[in-house]
Length: 102
Image 1: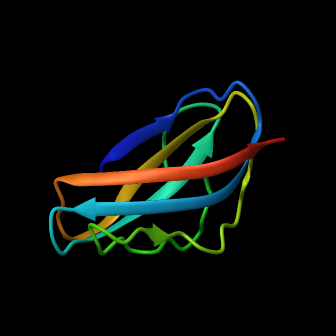
Image 2 (image 1 turned 30 degrees about the horizontal axis):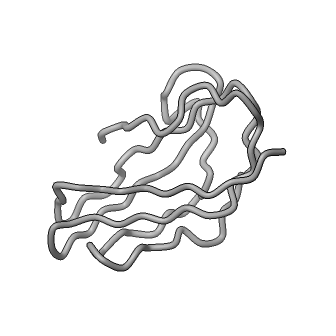
Image 3 (image 1 turned 180 degrees about the vertical axis):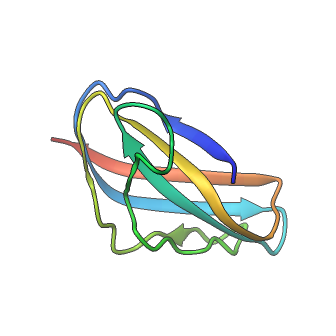
């Protein structure tokens, strides 16, 4: 599993409203799990933003990570992802997180 930091130590609390992903350069199949926590970036201590993530399978059409579970992220927390399944590898993976301030 590879971990990637998305945001470190948020200055303000946020509410995640959507997560979109896209990868490529061709047919891919990657599943990333999104976490947050105020200490170490370890999956065991992190809170999953979505408990059952959707696979990203296209390089042009974004995959919406629907039905997010834990969307209120306090200030001082970091957000990261871990690739939990890689069926077909990719040389790019783009994440867009939409949010509002609390």
